[in-house]
Length: 188
Image 1 (cartoon, rainbow, N blue to C red):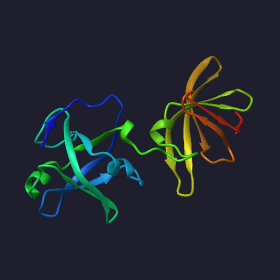
Image 2 (spheres, rainbow, N blue to C red; image 1 turned 180 degrees about the vertical axis):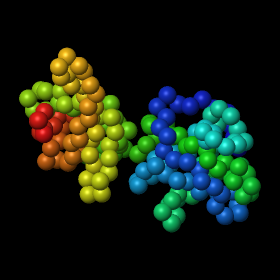
Image 3 (cartoon, rainbow, N blue to C red; image 1 turned 90 degrees about the horizontal axis):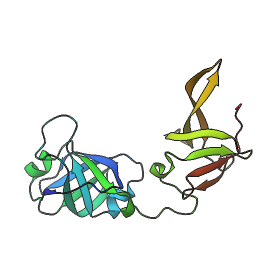
Image 4 (cartoon, helix red, strand yellow; image 1 turned 120 degrees about the vertical axis):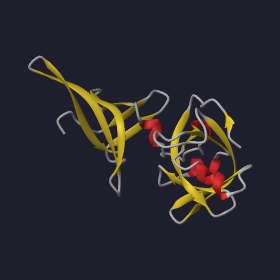
């Protein structure tokens, strides 16, 4: 069941096991995304122990997934060779990683947040606006949070800038070039 493994170089943490589900060895998962397709598309999950608490394993282990499905706002999964609730319960708190290469292909003009983090953002005038540090979901839209440095009176300080990630302001996302072109000015 818990096969020691090496974490893939492109592994992304996508959820956490929050406990057992039912009596036949299923686990309940808290996904980190509102659209947890990566949990459904991958049949190999990599687990690492929780930062705190006891764990039945150390290092990284691989789970082979029989089935994963949405259930009442979370995800439940059946693991190969886990037949009872006590074994499933022992995995509580484990962090779930999936290889980025096993994510489903994003649609046209759709992007995984993890792919946008670290991209450089420039405006139409070629001015550097910053580097994507994180993304925020505000409900109706997503916002890019950029970091950049600003020098005033000979002192350099780290600053943040936010740009709505909507077509009105984002002209182009070029993943291979690690660049986003935005209709945004330095003084906004």
